[in-house]
Image (cartoon, rainbow, N blue to C red; front, side, top):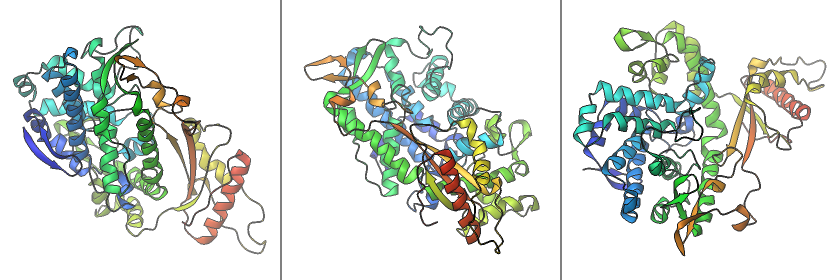
Amino acid sequence: MKVINDPVHGHIELHPLLIRIIDTPQFQRLRYIKQLGAGYYVFPGASHNRFEHSLGVGYLAGCLLRELHEKQPELKISPRDILCVQIAGLCHDLGHGPFSHMFDGRFIPLARPDVKWTHEQGSVQMFEHLIKSNGLKDVMQHYGLVPEEDICFIKEQIIGPPDSPTDSCSWPYKGRPKEKGFLYEIVANKRNGIDVDKWDYFARDCHHLGIKNSFDYQRFIRFARVCEVEDGKHICTREKEVGNLYDMFHTRNILHRRAYQHKVSNIIDRMITDALLKADSFIKITGTEGKTYHISTAIDDMEAFTKLTDNVYQQILYSNDPNLEAAQKILKKIECRELYKYVGETQPMKQIRIQKEEFNHLPKEVADAKPEGVFPEAEQEPELKDEDFIVDVISMDYGMQDRNPIDLVDFYCKSDINKAIKISRNQVSQLLPERFAEQLIRVYCKKMDEKSLHKARQHFVQWCLLRNFTKPQFFSP
């Protein structure tokens, strides 16, 4: 075992096979991708990267599995299982692009609208590339893994089950049988969202952001237990922990409100996206067999994608290529804090949600919502077009869209530790939220002069009236 001193988890031990994976160019690439993307431009402490987060997830995956193995030897958790789950934890974020979620959440949908691509898909592709290009199949075999089965199992943990299994009643996974289905709930829990990935980024992000983390993952691990439920074996926890789990999802919501969806970091995200879009066709990245790729097409070739990190920002900023001047101009504005101006925030009323297919039409709606009599007749009004507005629609939830994730969690009682039970929201507290999802709508203006900003606010107010949205909140830009 190799010992690493982690600022969040202390001294952590990692298996030699994990170290072999870490010491590859594909994994080391994560050192150059900020965990919180543009959040670093708002929170000076948020300088941590995907690299250390991935180490933490791999470590916590091992902690939870070893605890279950010790308490319940009848589960027959093997050293193979533990290693595979740790590898999945270690490699679950290999597919992140520059500035993390900005890349697959903002840039790729605009640069390649015909492609449905996620960082989970990228992680699976990069993992395959990592194994192949570093000849790790033999190393995996040396440490007791069966590459054909276990590589499949690792990839399934990262990306989840297939979208349309051939038989809806059959077990959708190939890597492990149904009796070991609880292993799929550790790294990326598609069932209720309680997984070691969240535990690490809660603790790590709070540590670097200077926000208090009220969730204690060590306590959850202590009370975790696998119980037989109607549809298989699932990880459960003690009934007295239900309040702590609500706190966990509340912590997630707080982090989104205060940091991940901060109005300034979001607009810097958007400005970097605009810069990458303008630079896309002029940035050349060499991939497999010398073939040339661009920022948006690097996802098609993992050799090229390995070379694509946050460093593309500096590459554009300091380039002498005249083709990159438009992109440079945007990045220089970020450097000088000349950001697109924040206009205001609103919400849809009566549980109405703006659908994703509407997003592209919203700037035109705001531009068309022309107010009357904003300026005196003698004074020339600034003209605002749809390209002058940015409308950012943000979904806030407890991780399962509008569902209560605790409804999907199973618990057990001290009196019968093998029987799984459900606990309804009303059994916990009358003070818990009635709804578990909402949308926030923020509007920004690319024109920065005071007159344009004043008129943009009037457009925004008029649009809110026409749409029957909540009264806008205005803050200083």
